[in-house]
Length: 366
Image (cartoon, rainbow, N blue to C red; front, side, top):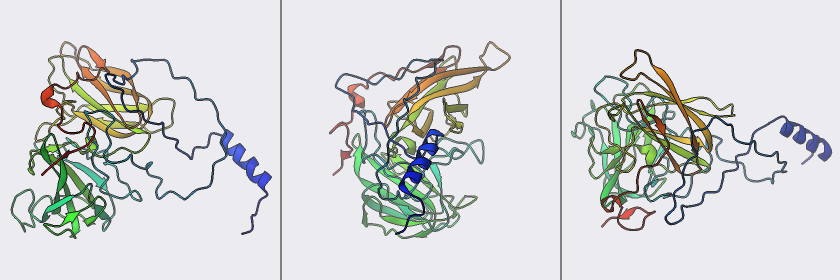
């Protein structure tokens, strides 16, 4: 192979581009599991910007070209720094495609009617994209008619859908994952699948405006009313974390469809927004009791803000706080009208809430 430039010229160009602030490599921060009896506490609300990271110049070692630039690779599955967490599933869309939830179609959203709440997350993908099993298990359904419980019903809003009952559970409860709106079913009822096996192809069947995957996690029973937020179950990318929150009014009642803004400070990263859950068939995690989840956040310090009108006021006021997102971990915040934000995690679970079996692994099922 002949090179067009000399080695000295290449190094000169590399140094210039580095000093100009070029960004191209993500070096995830190592994750350290919690020591016994200790809990990682996020930083207190602050207005002081963090100290800048000293400039470092490292000549990269050539390696294999990454499959995708969308996200870093996932942590090993299952992943749980805390015994309260349960990141048991891989992404159902491969890394060479967009494989994170669409911001407008998260769990608990209200899109089509005031009384219809979204019980999963939507992942955008072109028609015909392979849909992958998020974990090992047995196919218990592969047909039309999931929502209406009428096999073959081509008017069913889920369209063609597959259900997998997983080989493991949580707190001795069965776990199911749902893959809806397929254009083609490839999974066979009764067959065993492993993580990454193709279940079908992305489509637009059922109640949808375009091709995408509707993905659900169901706990205990395979019903529409037993869902849990998939963003609390899908393993995060390395070096990235999850924001979980509970937003209430002065009386402690949950605030529904409240817009929350999340911005990584000292960064050109775009502003992220998320709404709290709507009312309906959604369920909070028994430990976090959340009504807000925003996953896939690069580790760093974020400003979290919202507009809220107290009961004793005629105008809304801006409320804000700062929270640190730790790699591979959940950062927890609360907001209560009249009091404001708090970054203290929920108390340790009682004995009734502690999963049986190993603390950081799924419960095995018979």
